[in-house]
Length: 328
Image (cartoon, rainbow, N blue to C red; front, side, top):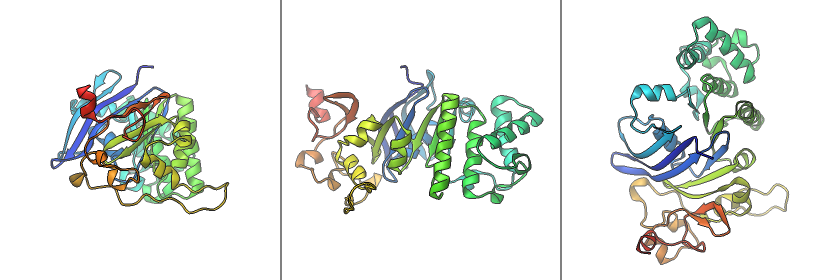
């Protein structure tokens, strides 16, 4: 299937310090794609860069093509039409993303007027319907309320309503359940799945919660230090994690059904973008590292028995350093 959106060789640097080092990914129409990894690995920056939301300090290179059109470095007017209208993003902290001095009805209505050309009355009626759809009780009265009058979970629902206002083809949910209790988390995730099924839109879920990703997503990308180091169908990735970093993430999950056992923590921390080690960025934390790991980098390569499972690691059969690949 032709990808709806394709990112190729995406690089991002702040003040000449690279934070993304050649991201390649695609999103197909109607699929649910998960992106996982520790904080600072580049998950959110990938999409902020793709939508032109990083600001003047950022320097970007590569390609971001949506429905055949290039978005990276596209004119601001074109990006304004795409953002919200065709690609929408739910940000991590709804209280920061919502305007505190405007009612939620005005904020949702503004998105409807901008992306669907509605007049004010029609926009308010549609905003009421959207609040009903995302489970805000007494939607007619709450249209005039302000963000501080809503709970954290309700503000997240308002953010989802705003994201849906433009009827996007791709919805990017960046940690949509951060700081919510588990009951509200389950409701928000169920809501996202229901809306995705109804509208046939693609969903990109950025999350630290591997359990949520395993339940919702069809395909998963694992990021580390500005690189994608493993990509696989969700079922295969969680049943057969292959990269040492992915195995570490999965190994840190508690087993609720089996006997109690000590969790396997990954030693160390994600390196600073300004001080990445040579070769494989995970090598200093990896219990399989060898001298060669610090001498060369490895591109994502398909695992021998499954073309949909790709990994960047010298310890997997068939993997070679980039310079060896070029020389061959």
